Image (tube, rainbow, N blue to C red):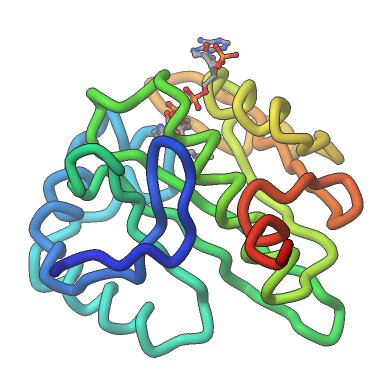
Length: 188
Ligand SMILES: CC(C)(COP(=O)(O)OP(=O)(O)OC[C@H]1O[C@@H](n2cnc3c(N)ncnc32)[C@H](O)[C@@H]1OP(=O)(O)O)[C@@H](O)C(=O)NCCC(=O)NCCS
């Protein structure tokens, strides 16, 4: 068994990352259609480098999960909480669905809700923040549906394809989030 059902939704579940998936991640992170939305588009991600990244991630205190399609048990992407600051109960969030066949089908929104549920109701965080490029309309829509609010922007801080774009900062607080999984587990 490659994947483990740590947080379970209707379409997908989140599993601890598996270092054996390094090749799949390397393929996705070298696909500019995916990486243009991430800070990694200018990086050369080799298989060796990706293995090291995954090993480092599994050793740090970042919370990193594979996103697994429930129907097929296939890995489709990755999401994480990082820069976790426990005294102030805050963290940052990142996500990508590398398998483009799964875009626009609700998987990203559900995976985000699952990891927020974990952050707010297991790690007891209070504030989770993300950065998103202004041209990433799909991601912004998904985040707004979940309850993230835009709290500011850094103007013209992303330059790609000869154009300048803003970086938006969005956050969500624990009391603005409705649990989809963990609170049900506690109902006896
Ligand atoms: C961003 C991402 C995680 C979203 O996940 P997803 O499963 O594709 O998105 P969902 O289907 O859950 O939700 C997307 C919503 O945006 C809408 N949408 C799609 N394209 C849009 C556009 N150009 N403008 C406005 N809304 C758009 C969809 O209709 C959907 O809303 P709906 O459910 O109300 O119809 C995923 O597309 C992804 O990984 N993209 C590449 C990497 C990336 O952008 N990572 C995030 C970096 S901040």
